[in-house]
View (tube, rainbow, N blue to C red):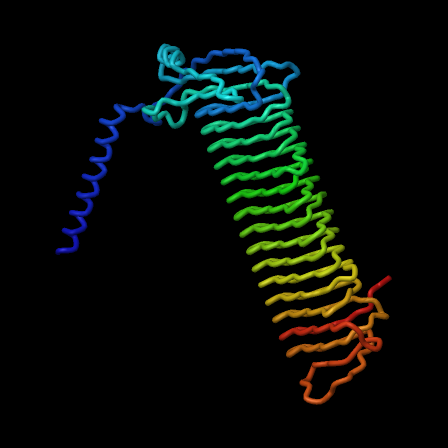
Length: 430
């Protein structure tokens, strides 16, 4: 009987604590207008004001509720257009509330500052009073925008930009200069951005990131949960693409180094040039490369297939559970392994050593008929077949299905092993 009584006492204590918190909120902030109150009537008004840009090199905007659009203009003035909106239960209440919706424009140093803040004691979560800004600036203007609830759009400027939204999409189009973009929940789109050798950083907590025609020094793109899509993107320094839950696709571009990571999603890379290392880490998903050149490749997936077409130089690929297929390899140096799956390589080989391994799966190579290699071929459960004669050089103390010798007189080392599966060497078709 003691346990039920204890549970009841705990429930009563919890209720008392909740009641105490509610009382503190009530007497501290007054009676709030909660979000469940249905506001059906709307009142709105538009305002416009011009400001001299002399001595102003930066625009700063803070908007608690509403969209912000910044566009470049041909003149020297800064024009602030504001659309104010209020919702209430009646039209009369909405009109009265609209009179209290105000923003401030001040000059601080070399910055023009535009600020709209919500009243702290209002809890209108679904329809807060808002202001949508459209601000026209001279083209060579630095821009900084902080938005709590609303989208941000930046077009045509030629200065550094820093854009942050807690809940809203962010789009950037046709700008020059360094770029820093973050949103907690929203889609990020960047098109025709020329940062030169300056950095570009884009982040979305919950949303996709789409980049097209972007030039940067260092480029970093991150999402906790969203896809990453790049097309015609180039970084003269390092490029990092990371998402915890989402696919990554990158077509047409270049970087000095490229690092791609995703905890759960596919990685697709097409027509890229990486002058240094390419590193792809995918915990749960397939990795696909098509005509991607790099100084070296390091491809790793815990669960998924790896497919590459047109790679060269040092190629390291590992899959926990999945096959590895490489076609049209050009003078590649191989380090391929999978815990469970087939391994297939087609192409020419560079200076070794080369190593291919599968715990459970067949291994097949298609190489030129005149290739010269020292070989160590071993399968625990399977057969070894070679269209190129193997000159056996070691026979003592070798287990069954284990050949040590050379092809065409020997050369670089090739080691192939599988616990369960066939090993097949074929002649590459010309």
